[in-house]
Picture 1 (cartoon, rainbow, N blue to C red):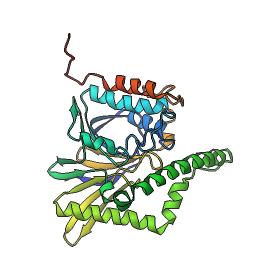
Picture 2: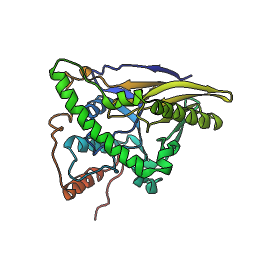
Picture 3: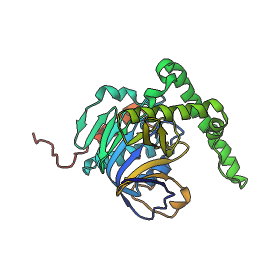
Picture 4: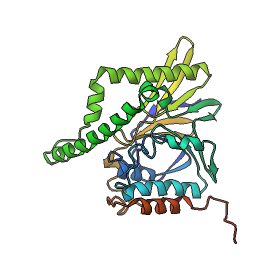
Length: 302
């Protein structure tokens, strides 16, 4: 029987992971912690990868901002695909344009709106989670406005941390502090978890995995109709977290910068320069990356 535990990982070499679930990377925004994410991705060797929504932030995507480190994350994923690693891209609200491509398959890559798995006799339901967001369903313009304000807050936070570190103080998260202090935000998270759990229990699932609310969590939720293991992969803006499944066990990975300081990983040299590309260059680069041959598939010769 699969068990749950939390861990603070200290990777010294590539770790083998049966399933990696990661969400809310928000590539193309200033808040994306691409350096930390690259360190993490380069430290593991997954058999299967689930990208659980909001990987590329199409709401805030700008041709004026696409750092090399963001492109390197795309390249890392496409490299896994070329090596035959099964990669499922589950659509989220910030990359909802991809929802029309649900069912698309190319080699070991496929795009879906949700994913159902059976692991060690247990039913697992994986989806992004925005379907339960009332503001998303009824006030999308307000949500988009909030996302731009959130990105501005991240920029201000970076400046505050730059000053704080030079004063010998630790980093702080303004957005996290604000969310934790606003009762309505706390209620939203609790309601989100409760609704998700109730529907999972009703459908007979043993596990439900989400993203969307940027709140990493692993816990058992019980109602009068049953119980379910609720897991949330968090994000790579504030919490720098992911879910890993290995040898019948789910763990919540939380990135610790000090664990990676002395670790030299491939593809991690000079990839964090903030190089601005125009739209043509960006399109051509992404096209080249996605044209990598999937494992076992060779292009037909003319």
